[in-house]
Length: 312
Image (tube, rainbow, N blue to C red; front, side, top):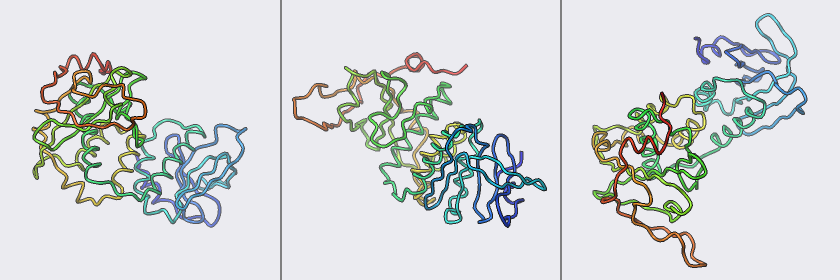
């Protein structure tokens, strides 16, 4: 199938209106301003026409445009996301993420995607090495369970900051991933992350050993993108984490894969040394370190049974 970039390369900037070409259920094209256009025919004809503009993006919902399709010109009601010339530096990310959408979107879903892109493109924060190490552990857990046990926990990933748990399977079952470069299996917890009175919690303990010949964060990201290519939420989060990080940092952050596989451990929270869940009134934000070295480990079969997400 012809790629999005190949489609865009064949489209000249029009003197007026839009020039669009269809790819699957979506349109790609260019505006008279040279902006990149992506979108759909509006699904809700009763939707009030709406336009919102940011520095790099613009969205138009249920808006009438003069459109050229080759030699044919007509007016169409479209819902479009427009990457403005000011945001052309994000074109690769825009295409890469948008091209993962393989099913038709509603106008509301297109708006939600626009808001995600707006947050991504406006993010100027640079993640710390500690945060990148945390991302490494989360991605490794997803890839490990997918490849070894055919379990896809990526669909339950909580990408928003300040969530108590990395994965939320349902209201009760939670998964938290912890990494350490220490020689002992010591991890830092917030009290709620081990609150077994309220949640059924599985902790994935990953010990990391730096290794110049190891698996880089960049390679792990590419692996995760390949395995979970239809998980737009995850892909946006990955881009959000690394878009302001130099490529050489992603490539040099390496850990020994064999060491990880030999030492990855799945532990139920009720087996982990912890502070009692109930604290005195007026006590908040309790955090502590816990040594999981002697904790009983979940077997592979127990993991599968607990998660109950093995693919056929």
